[in-house]
Image (cartoon, rainbow, N blue to C red):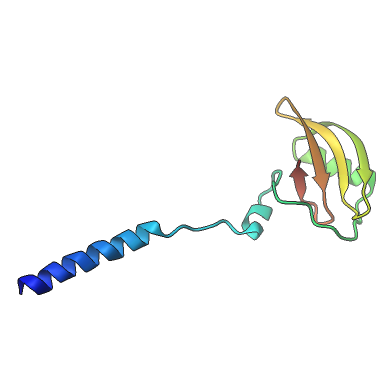
Length: 101
């Protein structure tokens, strides 16, 4: 009986340790759902945003002094802006995702 009880305790401890050792990674889709700037790369694709629409989207997300907006060969808008008193380089992809780089 002591052997069975001892084995049960050991297995319980091992099982608990394995549960604590598991980690959960945040998938890119979850990060992309955030309304604020991302750290994942912008997605290349056909961009239907005009320069004015790209500027408006950035400003609607708290970026000010948006400047130097240009669309690259992958249809991603790039520019400079200020947010929280910090100057940042921003990108806006065809999905409307804002990326700070």
